[in-house]
Image (cartoon, rainbow, N blue to C red; front, side, top):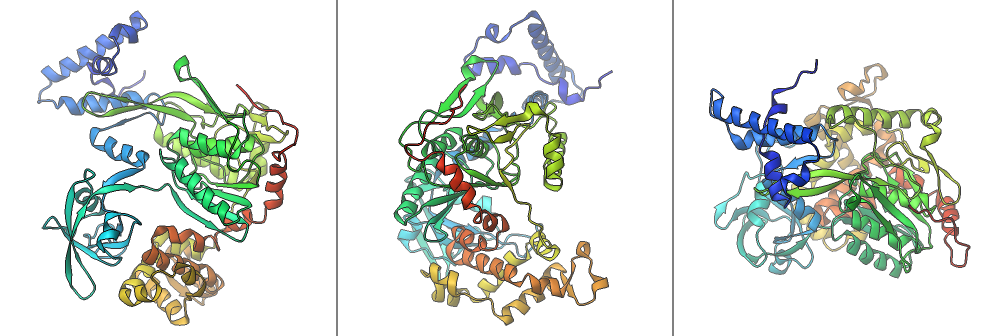
Length: 572
């Protein structure tokens, strides 16, 4: 006999309210006598609980719990979003907000202690063209008050809340500059872009690189702008980095793929039991980068819209996909608003790649814990025993690209070239602790004004000329031991990675890696986060291995050269 948790039997008027809010008549959503009876059952349960329970009941709370419980029976990606949360999510996907145009961070008073109180917010840099840049706000300024009220000790979210506001409204920000001088800035909030293309640069004289962190409404326009800039710099081939990109707005992904394909090719299609959610997206003629070699980097955190891009380009033999198997999120959600401003984000269809592959990983209802356990077990199996994993895939999950290459379904996109770098234990330990980032910040803050005076406006010079000297190297390891308990030893028997005890020789062997990490994080303090990829990519094993695979990417690009006979074009 199945045992139901208390939260599964809660409200009642939910479907009545939902039908009203969505502009539906209840008769239209009740397709059978049984459905109607179950609705009545919910209503009766809600009224009994609300009126007869021994204590007074919070109707809103139990209603929300019941919505969550019903969605949990469906799939892992259908969810309930409160009215408070939905505004922030929508802002992220719109790609802009009303603000003052700064990058800032709020460290803890005890660095590395997530429970320690917050310190004073510090401006890292201003956003080009924003109100703060125009007013003279500088990197290094400490934010001590907003509209005359102290904000020392505020979290980053609290700082955001007081600085953001409707476009055109005014806010006074008080900062403390080097030497203790306090300055009031009267700022008029303006539209501040939230960039999703977070890095774009020329790797060498013909290789362009572009990192896309998520897909927002503005992502396609950003992509086109950066593509034009790279083309003007002589780009002949392009790396698109979608690692850790969890997706977002599908249409932005579709439009980006369209710029890389010639016309008439299926990009993605969706299928649903409701015909209104069935759709096919196809490319049009006139893309900006239809013929040159492309490599796309992905990993286990590339999902949804990222998988649409990777799947379409792989199925049409347009780009070489490099990295690790993607997450496998192929369920399409629509947002259904409720009366109080909250939202049902509910799955309405599934994504399929042009060859017919279902992107979604198999799941059992909405059990998130089981879903993620199974998901990462599958990813780990593919990582550790790739050949065995491929052999275990049934023929029903094997598909053909336009030119006859075998690709695999069953959830996620399996790259054409797998890169599973072995990360040395000492590097893994430093990364787990976040030691390099925190040391770089402490080193920078110890003489911030002098460092800014030396390097402001000289980012290209910084990349080539900044050097981690011996004194800084030794100081870094002293910091690692004092702050994070990381010990280097010459005694091979004392090495214990679980206790963060590593061989000194292994640290010396990875010196170039650590020095590059420190350099990248110092660059972030001076120039902002967009300065990190050009430096860190020089030691990124996936990126570096991808650069050795241009012959494969060029072979795929040959299929798309002008004048070549058209290949089979997938359709649905």
